[in-house]
View 1 (cartoon, helix red, strand yellow):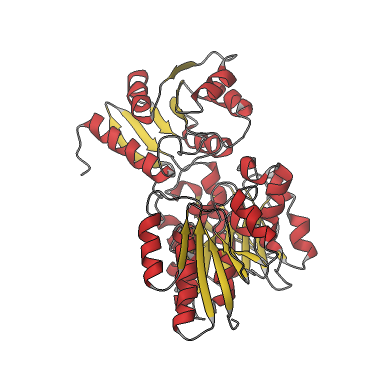
View 2 (tube, helix red, strand yellow):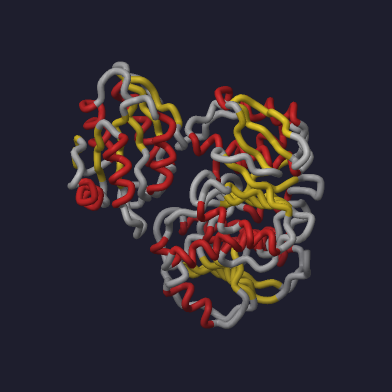
Length: 461
């Protein structure tokens, strides 16, 4: 905690930007010498409504602008690309620029668990919260998975544990952010249109360890080459590294032995739960469960509570979520899979089933060729939709796999229903963002579920 004074400039009026501005206005209302300005280059959607609320409390709000006033501190929302006009203007002011997660850490009193990775962050974060609560801890999710981190940080007392899903965008602008336990799941190509290169993306991910100290814990999935490369970075800080693996038996760490998730503290091995008793599907979710169990064990949870929690944790919405059965065909909503690696992981959940896969949306500058080879070898058929449909079609042209190209999600689901037979699965695991047709992956996933319900003659209203 510190005394706050001066002109705080918030960039971006999304949920996290609004929360940061509300916190700063609260400081001013409590008597601190703080002024607040919020700038967003957009004007659409909920921005006007949010701007009205903040102006009513005394903030200056500038919409549709990339011009910035002088400031003493800038809090940047995570979705603003570093190469954007807004961020160029911000850097030109020559003052500190921090992310909302950094601000939240500075005002918090509780210890933090931070989870990052290209894929699996949300499920693992939710699972860590679930396991901590099952063990009797007060645990609060924050950031991408829960309320804005600033709001959680204000409300959580010192006895709580804040569990944050942190993206590369957020980590790029941290200075003092210091999780007691960090979790690194994987680092595969994603958001290259934002970061500019794979090296820059990985470097921002690695900032999760930047302020950890001896006595802290880093949980790292060593099956993933990108995450494995982070082990020396964490160890150089004196951090205790717990390696997790489905493919090997690291000690100390967490792994699978004879079909059972186990924890290894370096001197003894304790079975936690048979893999078959996990409700979440796919090899990637076995890895997520191992990482969550290792992290929560490091915080003092007992084995009995871990066993109960792992066995009772249900799939999250838009993450291999069962969406219904129509004419003997199962449908799954994996709309959160917005990059090729996430699609590859999803396909491991259906290794013995014919799959009709829905791919499409807006690509993020990622090479789709490796995914095309995997899909062609694994899927019965593919339906391509949205902006990236032609890119996927070009990547698949050399492969003999049944495919159709359609304009949107609705026509994709209906095409898939015609191509699938009883016993097959239809999976929306698009490998791209939703922003060509929808405002979020959640909107896309809910539309998918609604169309499946229509096919089944169900009413979701």
